[in-house]
Amino acid sequence: MYSRIVLGVIVLLLAVNFALTDRSWKLASAPRVSEVNVLPETAALAPVRAATEASDARLPYPVRGTPPPAIARPPLKVGFAYREVSLFGMPLWAYPEPGLITYLERPADMKALVLSPEQVTALGALTGRDYARHRFPWYLHLWGWLLLVGIIAWTRARGIDISRAEARELQAGEPRSA
Image (cartoon, rainbow, N blue to C red):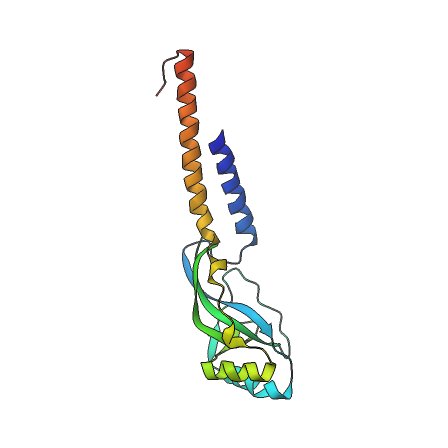
């Protein structure tokens, strides 16, 4: 009985995850971007926008993600570019690669500019925010391991169910069927 409850919870969580995630369902190592801030449209940030637009770096959208609609002038954003390893649409691990970027979301892909430490400091001076102190939240990308915990819990619950069934059979004096 316990194993059926745990298995039902695992199946329910996988179904909800499959319906809501934009990640690939198979084992994947994909680049992603975590938005930190939307930069204001000011004259001081015009060179940053121009450098981002001139950059050749492009990041794809997630496999099952929906790109934004075409906008004449999309907002300039600051974010963390990272790589995420996932399985069944659940993240197992993530690490910053290459780190802080400015980017523009276009319908085909994201145009990105990788920021050097000096550029991060300069951007912080222009915006009044200290981006150099901002750290990548890697711990938010570990919840995929809950599937393994669920499988272990199901195995343990199945063992308990089998033990109880064997004890009931021994008490009833019935021979154990194979």
